[in-house]
Image (cartoon, rainbow, N blue to C red):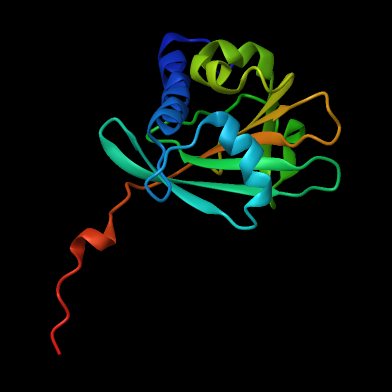
Length: 178
């Protein structure tokens, strides 16, 4: 398996740390949102919201939006992968799938990977009943999708992708001189 050796285990745990940091320090308009507030509120927002959060002392932005799909709707939380090192999955190219307008995706066993995501389980485990991980070495991206048994309830998708530290432009403002 892709994350079996020791270095890979600590590498994949980094993603759970990023998620945990987002849940404990997210801020939008001077307010922190709980997992329940994100899950119940995001479907009614109408547009993406950009949350500031901090991981390892570095500020980042996370985007939270709602995606209406043909079968399942998703609350989508986009997070930086913060130095996660991608390795080739070892799967043959013909076993890779095409999704999100690019090839190279492989599906990983979400149930097995949950041991590396205690923060995910602690924060949203009570809301969802099944999980799938999609991994893309070429695009440097991981999508985690969680589903409920209720057909009308939205799922949750966590997207880990390259991100950059956030810089607060407002802190750079100077008085306007006319």
